[in-house]
Picture 1 (cartoon, rainbow, N blue to C red):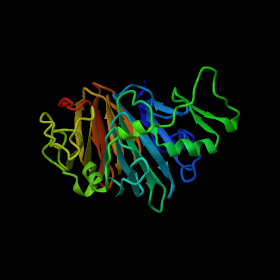
Picture 2 (tube, helix red, strand yellow):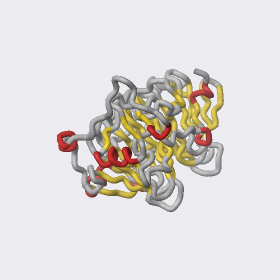
Picture 3 (cartoon, rainbow, N blue to C red):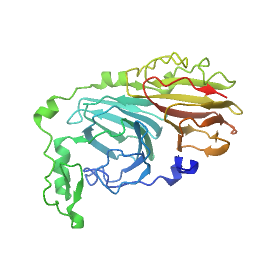
Picture 4 (tube, helix red, strand yellow):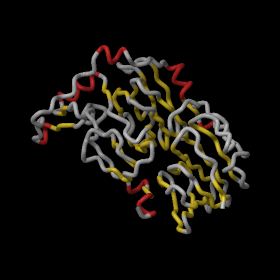
Length: 332
């Protein structure tokens, strides 16, 4: 894959507006879902996948106007959200009444598997969430029973194989396929209950980031790093995050002051760079890539890469890497 094919500009994101069974439910019908690094968990086979290379994790996105809701559901893997812009409420419970917490730009939440959750743009402007799901195949979404009932009223049928049938477009259930059974009481009982107080335990607010200047990556003037997801990494000098359980991927934030740079180095795992603030120039095997706010870049394994901030404000990138303990980078 060419280097430019590993860059997904925010302005070039291709949304799917009917990715899931709740796509026509009142209050949820204006949401846009994105699969940046696939295959994701969309139920619509026409969902656009920007980068299909297996990374050991999936990168997605959700963009919603004020008041727009993503209905209650659960996942089979850990799910991490970074609030890119807007204010968002995360809501737990099969009936959306177990817990609620509001996150603001830059905040991070890691929602464990087997927890019913939904999220709503609770602010006054358009909002965007950067999302990471564990595994190359994160499995299917398990929906609250009420979602099935609402979908039926709007002509949508979810099949056992995870596909979505839209009867309003003349689609019918294929021969040999059956509708997905409505989530049972036993399945619901197997899920965890997380209340509002417990939700605070799975959130790291941007104001509480533990910015370090003594990590391997932050050994350059004007650079700081904060571990966000994953255990302590002694090789890199990164302290354990508040969200320190194993996800099979890690995430850290890198902050470069204006004029700061990180020298050429090689990584041995998949690495995705997401720009939250400002802009960065990455030089990868002597080729330059400019990353601006909202962009994602998947850096090839073993490629030499460097970072520099040519702007007038701090640049902040959220970086996700495969495995619970990535190897120390080799500087060239």
